[in-house]
Structure formats: structure tokens, C-alpha cells
View (cartoon, helix red, strand yellow):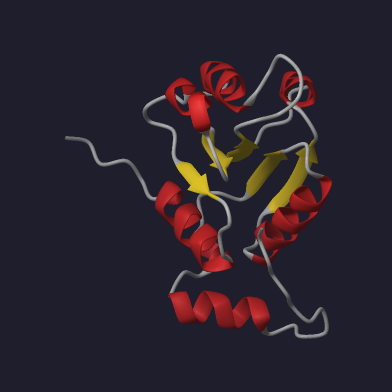
Amino acid sequence: MIRFAHDQADTSLLDRITQREGMPLSRRKISTALIVDDDNNLRLLLGEMLQLLGLQVKSTSNGAEALTLLASGESFDLMMTDIRMPGHIDGPVLARTARTLYPVMQVVIMTGFAGERATAIPDDTPILKKPFRLKDLQELIARLGEPAIDG
């Protein structure tokens, strides 16, 4: 379970996070995110965490809704999806489809227990293990926002 508490009246929280970690928001390459998870509480919590890190966030409760949103022309820098979701489009299927349609979009699979679905995750897709902390999320986004190094 992810636990995160913050005081909404504390407007300096975001400043303290970015100053402590040395990652000013003005340099971020990732500014928009799509959350795909059937757990409403997790979607809300993750949305708050991403907003604290300066991202604009939208969310859907399943893979079909996510693909409909993407097909509408809305673009995102990052999509975070749970590995297990109801319906025919789970996390690995959604990750492969979304990356085929939008190759520049970063995709992250979240899981507490992947089980047999772990083998279906594309090799180059980062996995964020639940539970995670705000700092873990911040480090992941910073790493994904770094420019690719040509070999």
C-alpha cells in the first residue's frame, strides 16, 4: 500500500522537494502524465503525487479507456499503468500498443505482484514496484526525462 501525507496549506512542500533533490521543475522533459489503474484510491493518490512533482495528470480506470483517450489526439509524456486490470487490455498489452502508437511517450508498469504477467512486459519498459514513495517516483521521472545518449 502506498502511503503519502501532505498538508495542503503547506505551499512550500513542492519547493522543498525540488530544492532538496536538486531537480528544478523548469528543466523537466516530462510534464504530462496518464495514469491507468482500476484502483480509484491509487489513481487519486498517484495523481496527487505527480501533481506535486509539477505534472499535469489525467487518469482512466482501464486499458480500453486509455486507448480511447490516446486516440482522441491527446498526448502525454508519460503513461503509468498497473500490470493487472480487468478486461482484455492489461498493462503489458496497453504498454506495447501505446508505445507502437506513440513511440516518444514514456511508459511505466506498476506492480505489487506481477506473477506470470511479468514475462509479458516489454524488455525496455521500466517497472515501478508497489509500494513506492514520492522520492522513488521523483527519481524515476527524472531518469525518464534525461536525454538519450547516442552510442
